[in-house]
Length: 50
Image 1 (cartoon, rainbow, N blue to C red):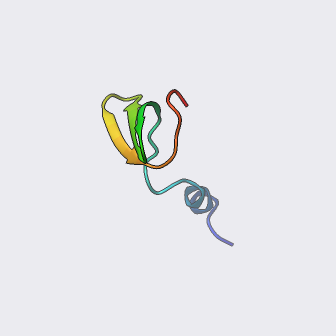
Image 2 (cartoon, helix red, strand yellow):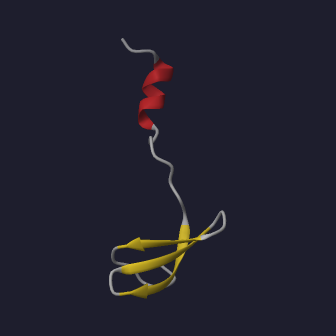
């Protein structure tokens, strides 16, 4: 039986998550205003404000 704490840690994501709001879309390029500050350019499908 594995350590319960280790099992809990295995449920957590290993990469950080960032939260933001889409501020512009140009083709497949999306600009996202991050909650912690800054703007990130991403690739994918989205709608402004969503």
